[in-house]
Image (cartoon, rainbow, N blue to C red):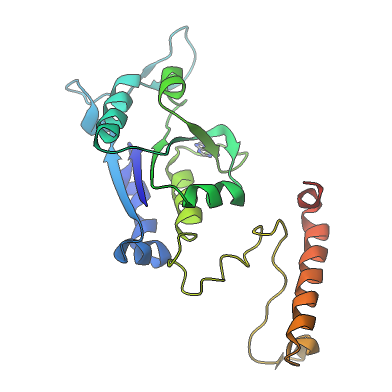
Length: 225
Ligand code: ADE
């Protein structure tokens, strides 16, 4: 998989890809991540990427031309499955979206800034608009990092134990059940006895029940879908 991220602040984005699981995935050639600075696609001496709104109103708007030049350059080199725009008014990121995107070959992610991009960018280039939640960030970069993390960890071979992504919260529409490790007892706090018996069908049933109870208590909305 290849991910191309278009941003005015590459330095804000890079560190998550230089540590932990994302770095391992890149080093193992399971994913390529490329950063493109929008200012490299500007045409004036000031390297302008934004301007005031037509019709008046507070806040600057990202101009169509540098974005067109950047996306068109990428699209001339290869086909893209999706051109994603990170924006608070996009569809809210859910596990299902990460699952779908993890199966793609090439995607572009455009990070918005200021008031956002000229609507013509959205009309003519963008295939999908994604928000990471109902709050406004100062730019799309942190959202793009969240989206990339959610996608990349699902690529086969990225997580050490292949089954561990399948047992994440949300993968079966439920939150994950409680988990325990050694010691069996700490300060008198005991691990549920049934986890020691080696009765795996019983343990599996207990985990399913716990996942259901936890979901019912914390996220009843998930049970409605
Ligand atoms: N840019 C600004 N706010 C955002 C959000 N909530 N999700 C994605 N991109 C954003």
